[in-house]
Image (tube, rainbow, N blue to C red; front, top):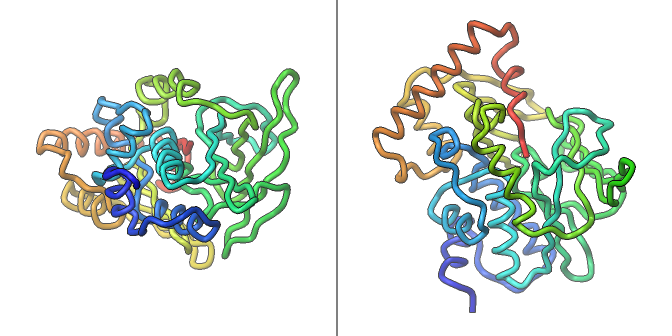
Length: 294
């Protein structure tokens, strides 16, 4: 019997509990990406949550989101509770298409079910809508194209895999084949969630993926990225508009945010946006792509 926490988590995803299967795994990842946003609200408010998978699962079940350590940590725990064979792996997102190192800023998952292995990821923000078979190949998914390759490691690096998303701002994510534990991500989580050099601390970001495209809010710029229709951008001008988008477009529950939290978050986002206006020449969506996804 699955726990009450799993029941609440599955309710958030709109998925009924079922025995492990390839079809079930695909349905779970689709639902996760569509209903649980990639976001850094608590980091922006200076209270980054820990990355214990059970804690993350409770937060997600209650309507929150997170970044990769929260999203994939919780998702892996849910999959394990449902009977899937899951391994966690140390990964790293990269801007350089020829990058071969693993910098440790991403938690990647491999899931084995029905005799097959899949690259599973609910924590990239702009990653694939469904799992990818873990083999060297190119995958056409609608109007999106991805690839998996054996990682050509740097000297002294262990073997692994390279995931490629040529259309994304971070076109490469390398991950090691060796299984990892959550303790392997603790120091990098501390850096990413507290350091003033971290993009997660500097810039507010929220993303949601569906079969046709990606909704992305970076700062006050809301973008819809659709390979068929193109990218559309809209600036948000008021707190009411901003928080309406968080709840409406991204499905992020706001009941954990007090009036003081909302005022502080809007002030921070608005100030960063105005600073950007004074110092940058790029269109908002292009500059916003510099926010890390991982």
